[in-house]
Figure 1 (cartoon, rainbow, N blue to C red):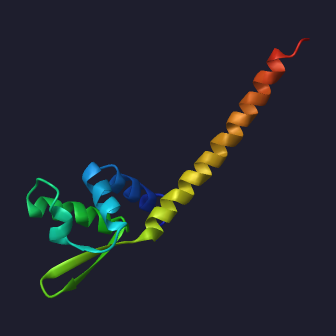
Figure 2 (cartoon, rainbow, N blue to C red; figure 1 turned 120 degrees about the horizontal axis):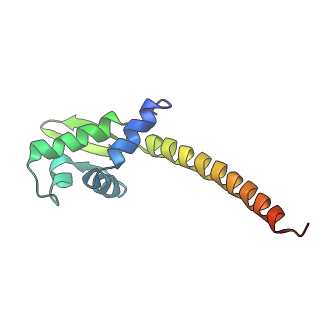
Length: 111
């Protein structure tokens, strides 16, 4: 699982690209080889494997090699890490918005 800060940055940077998000979406249904993952994309295989490298360095996927075939699998811990950070942000902002709502209500009260 990624560390705080830099690891979280890597996860969000990896997820910022639509090609990499599609790869993640595909891997939800199970492991796939490099060629299976690359098939729907109109790009050279070396360019596509760079995307896989970004995902792997961010901890979002893992790969294994058997002979000449490299297979990728989703690594849910990194997604859970990002989800935890997002949940904390939702909680903090919900609290701040509640405070703002309370303050605005006091402004509407007759004096």
